[in-house]
Length: 191
Image 1 (cartoon, rainbow, N blue to C red):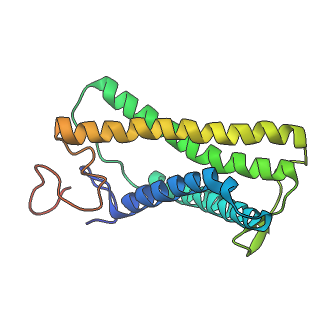
Image 2 (tube, rainbow, N blue to C red):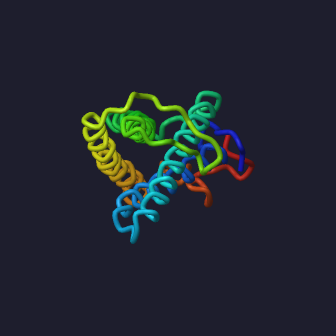
C-alpha cells in the first residue's frame, strides 16, 4: 500500500487519519454524553479533563490531516451522477467544518467558564475568551448541537459509502478501507 494517495485510491496516511479520527471523535462524543454518570465530583472533573484533552487531540489531528490533505493528491471521483459528486464534496466539507468547530467550541466554552485547559496534565493552553457564565451556557448548547449535527452528517456519509459498496458495488468505500483490493485493480499497482 502506498503512503500517498494515487489516482484510484487513498494512501495509507490518508486512511490512517480517516479511521483514527473517526474512532477518536465518536469515542469522545460518547464519552462526553456519559460524563454525567460519574460517581463523584472528583471523577467528573477527571472525566471532563480527559474529554477536553481528547478534544484537543482531535483538533491537532485535524490540523495534521488538513496539512496532509493539502500536500497529498486526491483520487479521482468514481463514475457516477454529477449530483452525487457534488453531494459527496459538500458532505466532506461540512464534516471538516464540524470537526474543526467541535473542539474550538469546547475550548471556547471552557474559556468562558474560566476553567484551566490542560493537555493530559502536561501543559496549559491559553483561554480564547474572557469569563462569561451567561454566554458559556449558550456555547455549551452550541457544542452539544454541533455534536448531534456531526452525527447526522456522519450517518449520511456512512450511509452513502454503504450504498456504494452494497448496491453500486463500486470502489467508493473500498478505496478508503485499510484492507482489501479495489475492483478492477491491475495486479501491478493502482496508479
